[in-house]
Figure 1 (cartoon, rainbow, N blue to C red):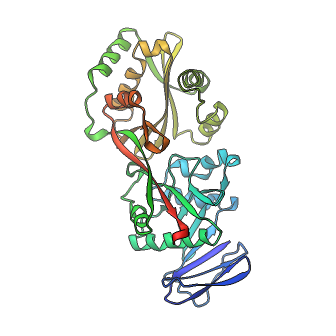
Figure 2 (figure 1 turned 90 degrees about the vertical axis):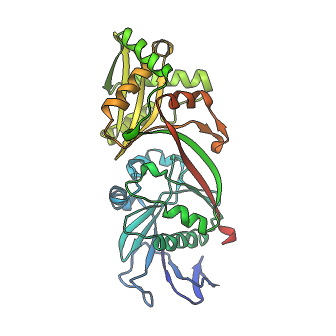
Figure 3 (figure 1 turned 90 degrees about the horizontal axis):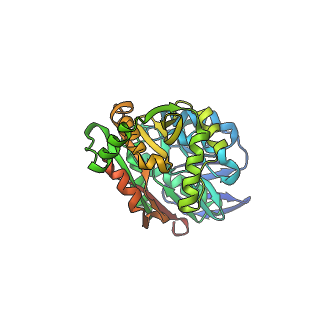
Length: 363
């Protein structure tokens, strides 16, 4: 479906299930059509102020990915080649937003029952847009998105906002738009992040681990041996929490093949034995730690202390941020103190991953 919206101060008609209904919007003229063709002209609509909403389809993949690349707040996780690795688990309901036939924003989303999530399969989602859009533009875009979803019987939008560290330029217009639309703050996960330009010193326990690793002649290196690391990771998660990694081995190998410059594996070994490792996601100016794990010997010998000393102080010292990821569960209500202690020991400090709920039934 294509939705067209523009500021307009009068009552308008919305076609829903082929039945016209009257809606008093005061600010927008909005109408829907059942075909997927973008019309070259919109009768009685101002081209200057027009926003056009299109439901995403596979045919839009290249255009979507190009927008992610030029946006001020997109990351490779929002590239369709990454998003679609688990497309069988989610019903996609993503949107493309055009202005004068130019794609200016995308909204990654899935639908479950009568709720839209942005996005259940990702750490974050939300509106991704180009730098030219102003606060007023984003307010308009939000109303267009709300109207579109309401017209498709959606009651709720769950919005995982992108943390500021992932943006190439200030991009919190969406947070203001959420506030203006009475969104409820329902979750706050906390991550540990290092500002590399002004990084803090490691705590003594991390320094002691580095000395121990050096004394035991541990070596670090970049590797493609995901199989060896996945065994350590799987065994640790299963023994400690009774869970599996978010990605299967085949999935991470598939993603590594697609994003070889963005996904990196580093390992620590003693002689020929792999003791520990980490999977990093590289996003423009930020290094994100996706997975960390060590076997019992690696923990005893300070393997991860040595590895992260190298990664933070040498390999990625010219990046802006080094993000260890979240230490919370249950929408932020459970804090894993032991995990947080390790990350804070390297100089990580808190960055919020906020989650909001928009109740469209009140709109």
